[in-house]
Length: 442
Ligand code: S3P
Image (cartoon, rainbow, N blue to C red; front, side, top):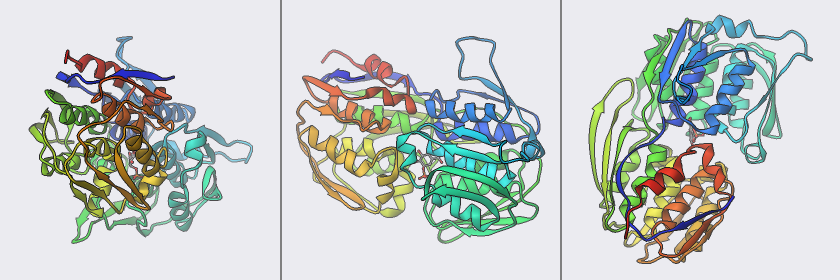
């Protein structure tokens, strides 16, 4: 489905965005793993999160929505505990869970760690895009620790055949919170101490959640990164909290407000965890007028963000920053379109293995609006401009490209088309509706 956008008018108002996708995936998985009933409000409405929920349902986990029919964001989960998962082991090869992960890399990789650790037989598949993404980053370390697991030439389908995971020390080879979380999940089933060494910081929701659940987990900060030390087989207490708004969704409205003259918006109750909200620091150093009012600290920092149209300068992103802003780079590229001078992104080859090859799709998007971008193996250089022309944006079926393209479209008077715009449902089904509600008369 194509979406038509006529831009050129400022955006103004106060909005909320749905619950954070990364935290929502983990809330469902850790809720299922706990020994008792967990309660969450403000869950993400993303299709990816629905995928995680459906897989847990296939495994027999029971969810109850709130009594209010319209409230799809509140949920109770009847956890079955670590022992409950072990009981799901199947005996014969004919009895194997067939689990479809759709477009969701987080679902696929976290479920591999969970089921691999528990020794549950499963075949894990996904859609075309997910089937092209690398899975050996999880399959190989799981093999090393004793899980019998095989990929299809490094990709899905992945089959977990059984095996028994033993205590391990593992240094992450990719700065990936998905790989880290998969290994942490596996460690929860192991009798003994396991250590995950993370040389470069990535999002830390898994660690925070386990601490909240009285998990036997210790974090040792190092000069470069940290060690995560886990004693497995400890029962986990249930969770109960409100999930903060997703900064990776909020960023598209932040971007639009920064580059459409006359705009000013406030987004309330947004996740401010520094491993996720680092993009705000990057934007501030580009000259963005952003006011942050922190309202909560625990279990995750949360607050309100006010953004006003700003004249921006380009910036250089260091490779250490990449994991902290990885999902915000398409929006950053839209902002860089209008920033004076060059914005240089390097050390970001991970972008090539996201929902699309995001270095290519960002390059195509910027060029389609008449922008100047040079594609590099591990990033890109954008030279800022004063004006964009109307565009037909190829989304490549990638939700974050469709939304970044929509942000640029909002800056342009005239008719823009976002192709296959329905892909926004992967993370943010309400995106176009909220964008429309923020539009004012020029
Ligand atoms: C995620 C981690 C990131 C991110 C993805 C969600 C998570 O992937 O891009 O959208 O919830 O752990 P990597 O950890 O593979 O970089």
